[in-house]
Image (cartoon, rainbow, N blue to C red; front, side):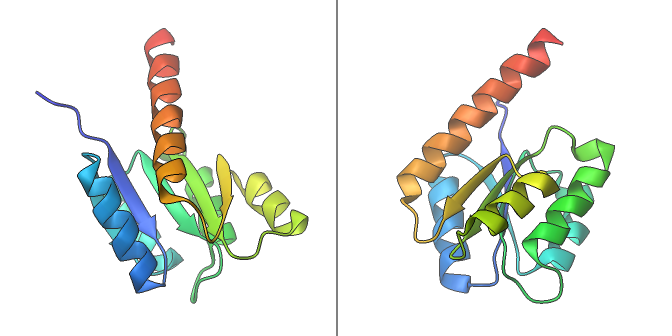
Length: 132
């Protein structure tokens, strides 16, 4: 049986979420999309993603608060959270880090670099889980 990583793309900008979904599907990921933080939280338990790619500035529930909510649930302790934002000042980076993001990337970003970094984090996480 082949193990397939699940990734949840959370972004209110449809062109970005579509591009990310297509790219990660081509890399062999099972992909789901959410338009905002509330939609993300509704999908977390049913989809159980290994990775969440999170936009910061979204309507209804932003990426910082959504990341905090994910981190409060012990079931998602191993979930990798990658923050994406056009707002890349130090305060925003620090807020996402404090909320529990594993990685922060500024928009616009190089998609190949995002895929590579996600792959490396998943590899490191799987080694850590096997060693426990």
